[in-house]
Image 1: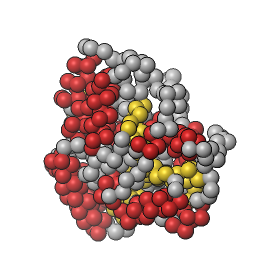
Image 2 (image 1 turned 90 degrees about the vertical axis):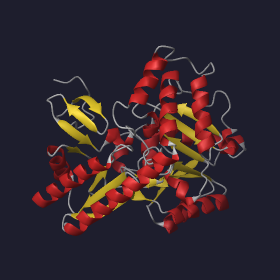
Image 3 (image 1 turned 120 degrees about the horizontal axis):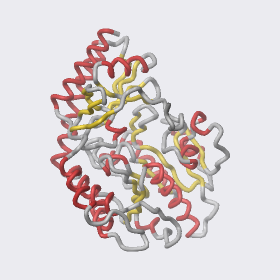
Length: 386
């Protein structure tokens, strides 16, 4: 009997340790982990530098209130701002919290300039922004919101439907919020030209652009942020997952204009920005933001995607499309992917579902080419048996 609530359909396997790209189960089996905690363990498992960062900081101080200055957080915020578009950062503990804070920043900005009725956020229907009340209604998914309403303040348009997007902007719209690459929604990439169009539209309508990079950011695409190749500058960007390398960290990055609205008392987080988390984040930041590291992600991705497309051509009746960018990859099948994922797991390769019959593949960013080859062999084997 388990005393955990039944809100997860958990697979009947548990792990006693991890090392690099591998997880070791309690019954002695070794799995190639291409889930990475859903893009969280960006540097794999038990990375020595992250272990050292946690150990060193744990002997000093774990937690102090944000009522006091936290030097480790100041240090990480500075690194994030120097690396990105941002001028200011607010820390939290998760992606959902970061998204909630991003929504608050957008609404508060217009309130602060005397436009309190500009408080609605326009999002992609059936996107994913987290599991808190605000985030599920931002996502616009009937499946997620059923039984939890009402929560107002969100409008939706269909992915890729530009006419629908423009029609949905009203005098009360405060911001457009989209995932640069839709993760749960099926690994759907917003093209650079479309991101540039979104920025121009927001400028024209004098509204804010929020790019949710919780899953696709922090080096996952080979750029530090997925939107960087478009040369677009958003107003607000929520992040989480990879920035902690497995330790809970979330953050909202924002430009100077909107940050002015966030005065003392407008937002807070008991644990957000704690010294232990910030010490890990600083180490992750130093590793992932390195140009050589990011170029390696791009090279590995190019190799992986090329070979996955070869498998698509080899098994056209099984694989419909290869999607994604960097090491955020989706294999779309013609049929439901549940059995396929189960077969991959039986062959010691861990992957996870996304919408539209997509198998989501999220290796650690420091994955080895030889480990990608193992994954390709397993996928080929399952296709041949399918």
